Amino acid sequence: SQTNVACNGGANGAAAVNTATGGAGGYTYNWTPGNPTGDGTPSVTGLTAGTWTCTVTDANGCTTSQNFTITQPSALSLTPSSQTNVACNGGANGAAAVNTATGGAGGYTYNWTPGNPIGDGTPSVTGLSAGTWTCTVTDANGCTASQNFTITQPTALALTPASQTDVSCNGGTNGAASVNVATGGAGGYTYNWTPGNPTGDGTPSVTGLSAGTWTCTVTDANACTTSVNFTITQPTAIDNTISENTTGILTANATDAGMTYQWYECPNTLLTGETNQDFTPSSLGDYKVSITFNGCNVESACYTVTTLDTKVFENKTEFTMYPNPTNGLVVIKTNTSGEFVIVNQLGQTMKTFTLNSNIENNINVENLADGIYFIKSLSSNPIKAQRLIIKK
Image 1 (cartoon, rainbow, N blue to C red):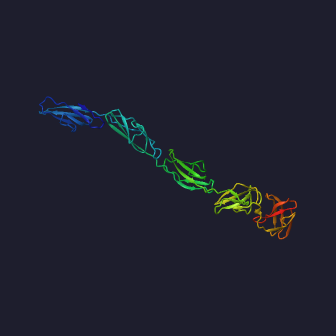
Image 2 (image 1 turned 30 degrees about the vertical axis):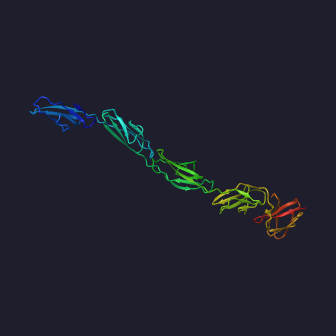
Image 3 (image 1 turned 180 degrees about the vertical axis):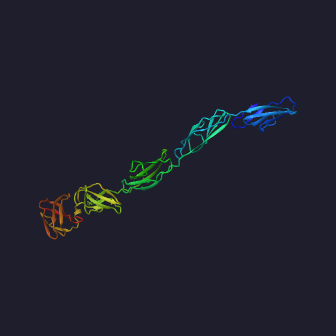
């Protein structure tokens, strides 16, 4: 009998002869070349491919031989076809493929290790992570051949914050943020800031940010991404409301230490000297206050004054007058020259005149109807006023 080698390069061939006949008996058996397992017997194993000869010798030294040609399949061969490396660090989108095996005994099966990638059992697999993957092909004789693939991946794509500037005034848009130039990945970086499209979008540094969360996302040439968040803050809003008390005084409700105030007659007439938190209107109309704090400025809405409390005008003044009540003529003496006005209880100006200081000035009010009026010194700061009663 004869058994050929199963796998190319193997040594599992075998051969056997029948027991010799004839001659003088006392047979001995010798297998050449080498000394295979069972040499000296009619049957040997462990043969490699090639020609093996069994020579039998009898007791008289007579010999005869039998040749065996042990064959083997052609070498089982497996070669790489293609390889796709992982695009993003930590990903699993690598792929590998081998060409259809050749040689051996046919009937090929394929096994990929480690794990069980997509397509295992075929020449082509996907879903590979970085590392060494091996495809082993087995033929009908159980012979194997292998092909290794080293699937690589880029270094991790990294993005780190560089600087942040918070909004200086509530409701402002002067925040800023920047990242360091990205590292790792496949290079070819692009930057995208969200939400919106701030000034500098597409670069590592942006300005014009409002308060809130802003995200910079970097994308490399392989479409891998990583992000950094910035929380842009802003100061608490300054209270820009006005309240009015029972005596007609307007008050800015913002009270933080260090705040400064400026009152206006609406729409934008600055009231010189009116820089306190409280303001006493001397005439009907609309008023607002501008408040500055830590470099931030807010304005109130216009507040409409519809009535004036008479007590507002009963302050200590820099002028005297008589008679009061009067029936048509009032004498005023002031220690400060300047402009004076007479207003009614609605704050409407009824008469304007200029007085000289330290003399008695006669003012004719006969054309004014009976009632309560106020004479105001516009030259004093704050404005001084006295109540005048006309009764004819």
